[in-house]
Image 1 (cartoon, rainbow, N blue to C red):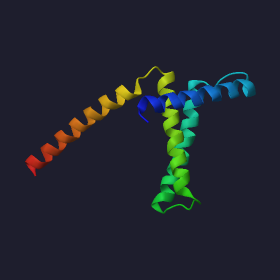
Image 2: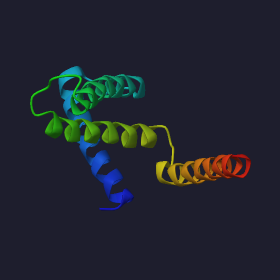
Image 3: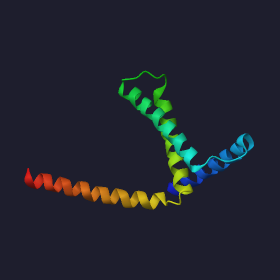
Image 4: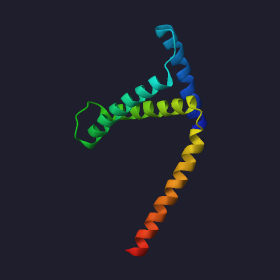
Length: 113
């Protein structure tokens, strides 16, 4: 599955959620509400990472960790789409810029150290 397939799958699920939200609440979640849901997922993810590190006890944390990472990715893909961000392009650009910066830092460390 490539990036566009992931994005398409996330948006299809979001369309289903929006149908359910309309039935339950008479409207779809706002971008702000989606972001708040994402923050909750990140909190759950942090607890599962602690369990993975052995500093918190959560039954079946490994399976839950995969699920929560997937939830977070879904949120990011949907939020990017709703905000008009080409996440794939931004990711490529950002990682290239950061890699160049870190490589420069490493080069500076090895030439002075």
